[in-house]
Amino acid sequence: MDYKEAYAKSLRLLNVRFLSEGELRRKLERHDADGEVIDAVIAKLKEERFVDDERLARAVYKQYAQKGRYGHLYIVNCLRRRDLPVPDELERPDEDETARRLVAQRFKGGGDARKIARFLQYRGFSPSVIRNVVDDFYS
Image 1 (cartoon, rainbow, N blue to C red):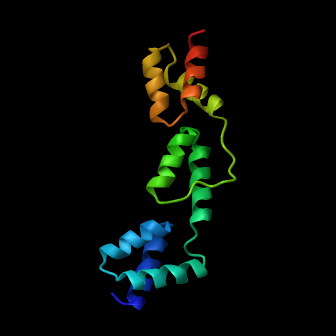
Image 2 (cartoon, rainbow, N blue to C red):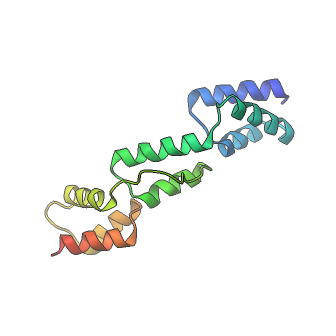
């Protein structure tokens, strides 16, 4: 795959969804693009601001935080799976409040402390938040 084909393929891929540099690199490698061609295409796309990992990471973090269903650790894991950096300056949601709201919705009539802890753990809440919520739920 030459430069023109790789560039056109990249634009088609980015038209569907914003991709991180790592995701785009892997997709181009699957289409048999040469490493030097990929580097040149990504450099051009960065110059044109079609690929901006920092901006994408902030947007993805904000999207997950606004859903109000996930803790910081879950969101960070999602960023890492997409080869995105964790933004330095970000507005972290109030995990205690979010976790309490989720537990109140899910376990209306009460529930086992282990189930509640596992429920929150799978959603990426920190152990200290889980401990606080479980203690409050049973006090």
